[in-house]
Length: 64
Image (cartoon, rainbow, N blue to C red; front, side, top):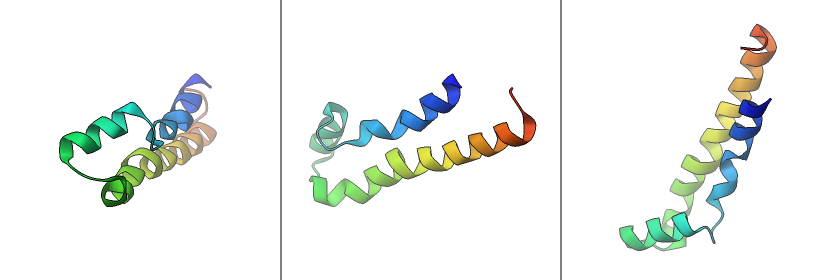
């Protein structure tokens, strides 16, 4: 259960006011508008796909 919860909350660190996002954008010299899609894919879409995969495997195989 802890693994599923940890993966499920992985996308919460992609909010625009997060310090890591602001630091990344300032180092790269990008605005939120320019990098929004890239950050959304890396920080929201990929964790959601891995969460679905983890729940599916957990349902098929059982606890591991």
